[in-house]
Image (cartoon, rainbow, N blue to C red; front, side, top):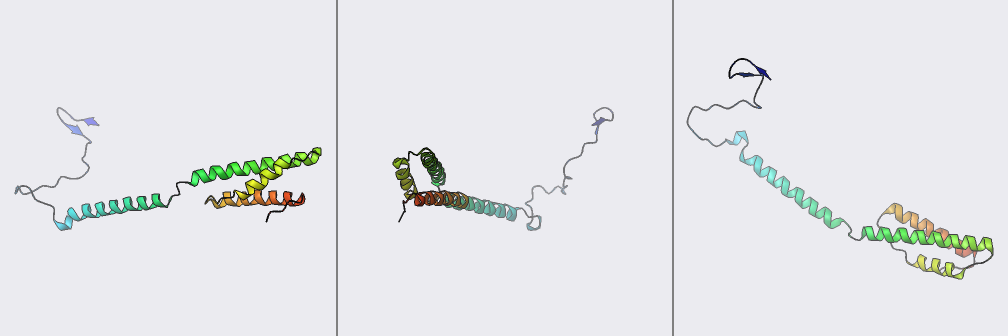
Length: 140
């Protein structure tokens, strides 16, 4: 900003030029200037955006995080029991408890809604069923 003498400022401009009137006083904007219709349109658009947000919230499954945590825990338990069976086979001391636990975990399958997680859980369950079939345990 530059000062050009007493009580004068230079380089300052307003955002838009001021509209001069002929001195008749207050006047409402005409329809061509778009006063009231813009406000009504903005309000209607805002109301629709709020409605879209409510519909999106209703579509969200509130139990999804719980289902995912449960599926991850079940997958880890299945893999742990498969490790117990592998160790039992290598050491010659097979645990019947690990087999029973795997059979129980296979019956607890619940879809989570996440296709990648569900696919991974199906792969783990298939591997567990193959290992059980090798040992002579078949699920019906």
